[in-house]
Image (cartoon, rainbow, N blue to C red; front, side):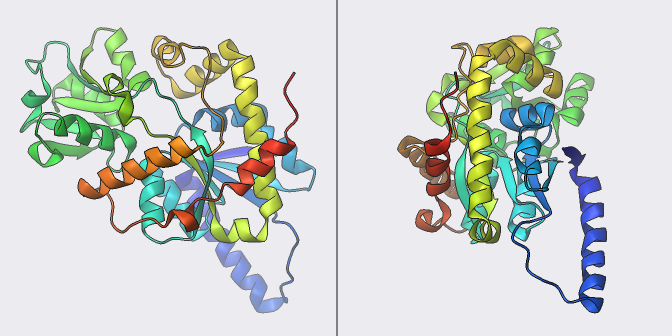
Length: 339
């Protein structure tokens, strides 16, 4: 199994497109009963099951039976991943809920087929330098705050500000990943950053930063991360979609059966704070079951309403067209119980 960053992947894809065009000009094309490659995307460095599959070749082993190559592609943000999904540059995407909701609302031919995770604990931290004079959310008014726009952190930050009567229009927002925002905070170039708790906890653990606000104090804000598929691919290869989800279920069950190994793999891959990761999964369960439950769908609908009201989403979602539970339900029926 190969794993490549999106920039490299995009260059290869463009070369492949040119090659296909040349081939069509010279030799008649014939329909194939299976694809040569399945491309699975995730926001970098990857969601938990994506990382575990990357580590041990779960999907590679499954689809090697058919001579199908698997490529794992990481994206800088969820919006890049869902755009690639909608255009057919990748077949599957593991993303946060916000990017998935936006692309569904745009009317793109994508399907929601499962949950990447639905963790009620954990969330986003809003952090400042340890010696910062900022003490409350109200103090952020007019300040420079960095976060990746269009992400769950963006949504959580909007909700946090809304709880004290502010909006993102009341701060100077900077669209930065942690690799840039962390050093900028420590230099004093910005006043605060919004990041996942396990990521930014590294600065908190070392005493370089402190938590101004923890969104996990509002578990009602938690919304599941999702698995999406390109609609045309799902229509053409429904059995392959089901098989990918069968492996996803197996990975989920393996993680719960091997918690210490799972945490080590995730921490090593994401460079997260082990202390924070263990806090998030304090019950020893990783909440990775892909089943599309009624409460998960309800949470996504509530998030869509919030995003629309906050100007984070255009259009509306037809859940009858977007959600397809059949793939994951059929996959679960076929997965043998893990001993």
